[in-house]
Amino acid sequence: MAIITLVGEKLARPGVEFIYYGPAEPCRTCKLAGVCVGNLEPGRRYKILRVRSMPSHSCPLHEGKVRVVEVVEPSIEVAIEPRLAIAGSVIKLSFVDCSDPEKRDLFRPEGLFEGDSVKIIEILGDVECNGRTYKLVKVMRKKE
Image (spheres, rainbow, N blue to C red):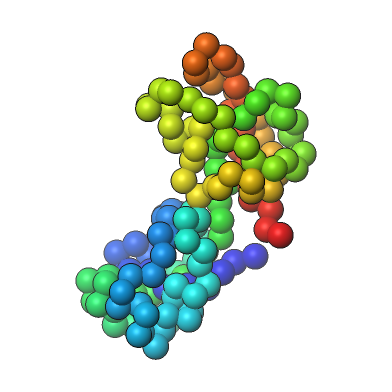
């Protein structure tokens, strides 16, 4: 189900992904904060599905203007224990430790939190770290 929010005009294109880190100071007193930042969860990844054909609104953060968009949480790739990698299953996410900084985004991707319930959409292959092999899977977060 799509969420309505506001993003800067330069980012307002279908397919663009972003991570919402929480409201900035000017947002606390903005009259549009409820529809803009009020619909988003800090630390989550969002993907723009559609830009609505409505007038833009003034914003001190986004170089002057924001647009109304529809967003969803996209699927995210994460490395998990092989025994949990069953397509279609729902698991509670438990991050695996990996000392390789180049693989950090696979083992602790932004947009997911430890303990999230996720549905495994697809098994993509294997990824190695610290002498062990893990499964790289594509997951969708299941909202409580």
